[in-house]
Image (cartoon, rainbow, N blue to C red):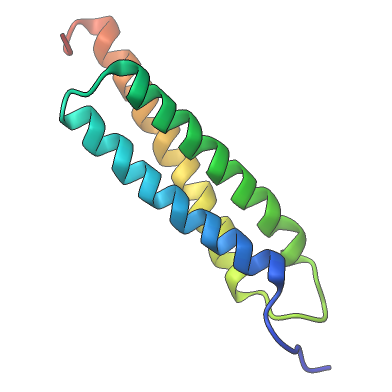
Length: 103
């Protein structure tokens, strides 16, 4: 059976993953510009929320048999990568603060 068209959930998941990538860049730039901690924290929370929602939307689209799954696969991969990068940078920042490396 030939798959017809792309999954709508997959396309939405991919769009959310792209938006999440924009927010990753945004909060890294804001942190580098020494912006207010509340603004950087809000950007991190929004990015994590967007990435989790995008990943959650992509997972059901992976199991469809009638539609193509390219965008669902890309959305899940990028979403999980964004979550891992964010958590890794947060842990690295906490370690740097605990050891006195960051002031």
